[in-house]
Amino acid sequence: MQTIARWTNLSETTFALPPSHPNASYTLRIFTPKGELPFAGHPTLGSAHALVESGLVEPKKGILVQQCAQGLVPIRVENNLFTLEMPEAKVKEISQDDISLLESILNCKLIEPAPIDIGPILIIGLVENVKTLLELKPDLNRLAELERKLKITGITLFATYPDSIDIEVRTFAPSCGVSEDPVCGSGNGALAVFGKLRGQLKTSSYVAKQGRKVGRDGHVHIGVGSTVHVGGECVTCLNGELNI
Image (tube, rainbow, N blue to C red; front, side):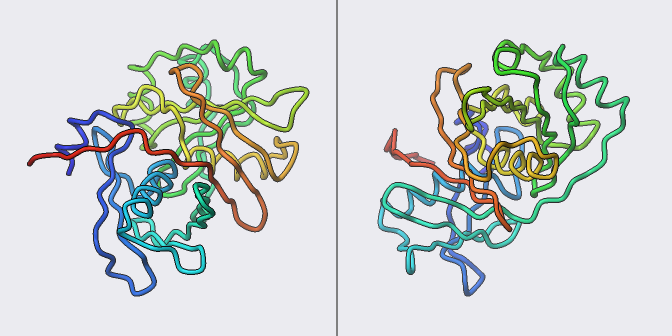
């Protein structure tokens, strides 16, 4: 599986297997080009869409349950809109020295950044404005070194629009072989937890825009309540066969 993921060279490559848990619809294993993840949001939603579209699984009362290394993940299915319930998140500690190092790598100040553990661990940070966020050009080699030092998957940065409840997001994970993720579901879920705790979000329901700097136009629908829900419309872009 890892060899195939390295060959596809996508942010994530997934493999669906029969479930071992009686309440699960299927098992999903998720790989970056450099390693396996216990959970990731975007591939969870895309894989659910692919499995439903191909007729391999069928939602029960509009719900699928994905089994993965992080546990069971419920996914609500409404036509082409797939929404997952995020695993429980934990806020981790980070030293001021490491924050300063990260800011030097980004050449940008961050507002109260923190690592959020949702299976993969991502540092979440608020940037002063959208213009600054979109102009960021991080030193990816130094960032990969820092990620390995801190044992994190990557970083997700965001900025708010002054005239909208929506936000702009960018995710970097060079230590995993992903320079910039076009859309990161787990990053957006961790961001929602972080933003709620820090009071940095204007509302409990919003759309996160992501991917503009890599030629994409992703829109992630976020709902923050007692749990965090992450979803969006899924579209099949490619069908094919792999000869092994």
